[in-house]
Image (cartoon, rainbow, N blue to C red; front, side, top):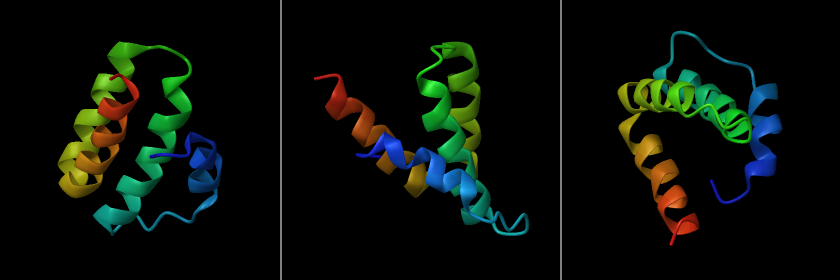
Length: 70
């Protein structure tokens, strides 16, 4: 995500538990919030869950992370 400040807004979205894409979007918001805490073990776990829920969203998220570390 190019704008991590949007993480809070993702958290405000209503999660539809029966929709994997909705759960994945909420999880992405949680990941973005937790990135600033620096708990890498927890981030790995959350990223794995995101990958299982929605591979496309996970790929888009990871692409933004690779750009930041170049």
